[in-house]
Length: 164
Image 1: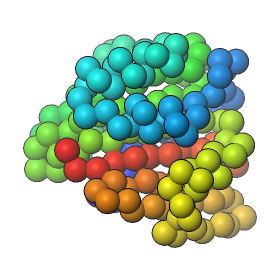
Image 2: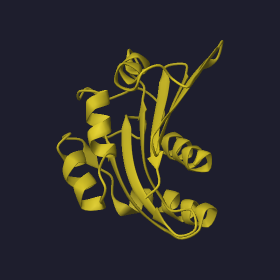
Image 3: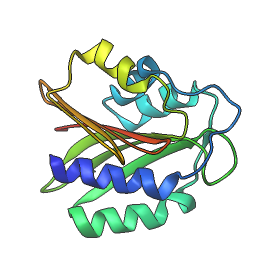
């Protein structure tokens, strides 16, 4: 499962770096709504309600190819960007099939204010919480789901993954 979280962090880095757009930032409730989807069509409907721009298959192809090479099996992925610039906030959802099958979701933002607190309010205290000069990491294991939070500078990445 931690390999899935690492893959999600890579997706967040690939899809986002820099300031967020003027559209409203994602809330923890919206994140869990999209990430709670059990199918690609369900995630598409929930993610599209955000009003963010859906990323094209062409924009996701490099990630998809790398993920399949790393993870084996196949993967279906959707992603949204909060604005038009490459560095704007992103949200992605994928379902991987094969030997390392799983369902996961990743959110990356440059507007992290209060997001760790919002996650803690929803999930309770993190199972692990590490604060360093360079950033903060937190991890929760809740039933079949693993939630990881990392903040370096003003950039935050949250990944939710579980068995498919």
